[in-house]
Length: 115
Image (cartoon, rainbow, N blue to C red):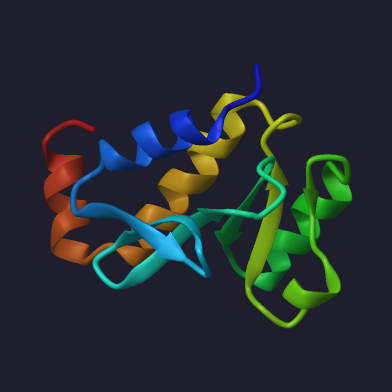
């Protein structure tokens, strides 16, 4: 079942140290000063930071869900169509990004707490 941006926001804000603000004029979420995700101007796509290899793998596996525009080609990010992605897939992607971006002590404390 697809996710809405409100569900994405709720999921991320439930993680330690995640804050909401804006990114390029759109709703965005960060952990500390590190970017996690933002809503793209089309209202259906989520911009998520991730490495180039994983981006290519996701776009090849599910091109209707994961894509980039020319603007994002040089950046380590992928666009995710919220209307097409399964909630579990986007949650897994966002959790992975949070673990990469959050301070290691915070990730350890979160995992030690059984999350």
